[in-house]
Length: 96
Length: 185
Image 1 (cartoon, rainbow over the protein chains, first blue to last red):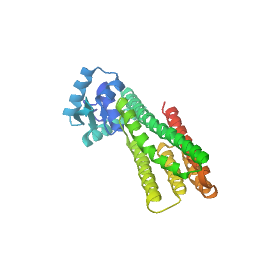
Image 2: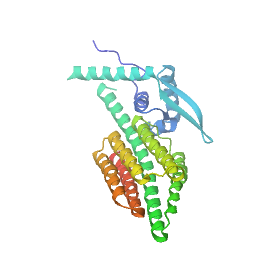
Image 3: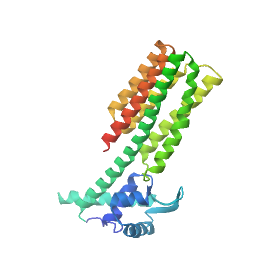
Image 4: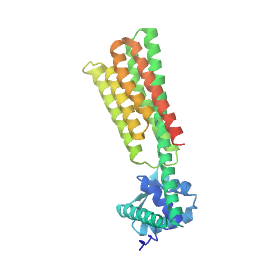
């Protein structure tokens, strides 16, 4: 039986955000927006969902005089991401 | 999304941010490379034309000019995240900076030492380690030859001609930055 894919991660934008954060220490909201090509509104909504799941933390601060929102993956997020990738690999190997 | 599409999205996002991060680090290699080249040539010419080794005090201008420039680059760039490799690269070069500034100050004010020999060795070592972190053989080899060759050169050549090894080191840092820009385009 195939493992169930995490519904939080199984969405294009949320997965892109988690993939960026899995390889970086932390990332700025603007950077995530530029990388994913998402609108600010949509990205905010998706980030809220991932934050609620406990996969990332969001910190609001300032860079000089400009407001800055920084996202960081949590250990639970790392684990969920890793499990998700393993599950995908199982799906793919079963399909071959 | 199919499993295939999900994996492709993960790979693309991961690789794209990795390239961004390392391409961003390249700017700092280029900044310090240009600065090292310009200052070493300037000191060489001033020392050569006046015969006064006191021009070596100009080395202390390097951090004074370099750090504000680095801060300016950081400020004007859209915040690029850091990863393990970029953090380690930053750490290696910060350690190099701390060692070279402190040892130079000690050599000038407290205990005379062969500062060119020491700095060229740690410069080559830092460059070599950067190559290892970036998994780039040309940078590893260049760093190795800069450190070892520079040490031999520093022992064989006297007075202002020794400075030319730092000019070569500066060019090498600049080339490293250019290689990184191309490698992570």
